[in-house]
Image 1 (cartoon, rainbow, N blue to C red):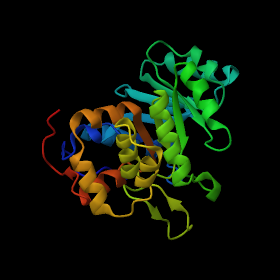
Image 2: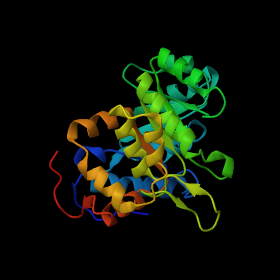
Image 3: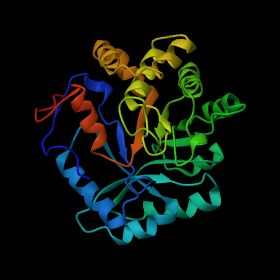
Image 4: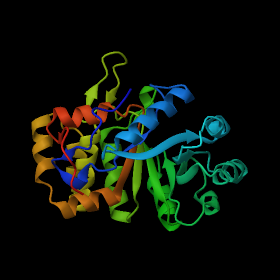
Length: 284
């Protein structure tokens, strides 16, 4: 799907939403074929919507397929999804960093934080954590390694959806330990909702952003968790509009971005909520 409109837009809540959404069109449930995912990404890049990061997420196992389809005019900012295992990551990095059409923008995956020592200087690395059991110890290991974290907010099975207590606890601990994070999967809409086909309870990307805003403001854990239960769109919008710029910027230093298989739905949702004013120039 294409993003809404073809011109820059203004954002009512400013820096809270800028560069929030990574392009995860290759991943479920969209699962675009590589040519279709690249075609959509090129259109999105031409439109320059400020909500989108411009990062194209691709599994390490599909990098050769991606590189074969790049044309002379392409310049892809790649978010490499790879097992954090040196035997897998090293050849993948060699492949993508040798291609002049690719800029390695980030690496993220499950495994050992030490594998991210292979990254070129300045490239951020994200370690995906399962937020069950003694995950805080793992988060401390990520902090000690100077890396960022990644949290899965859903998937194709019910057990992949964390509870508000689990997800809110993750946001709270990331703020407490000073660990930036990004999110993946399940954040299909701005507000929490239950999927009518699967019955799975999805978190909202807006309420996750508000949880980060509360966490950086020093809120207690219960208050961070509580906003993730919010289903009142009016209340969530009012809270978003009231966030001062410095707090929004601090929240985004904590919560970097999330991967969305659709680059259109997040824009449509924020527009419907009145948080994105369509067809107006963004003043950065």
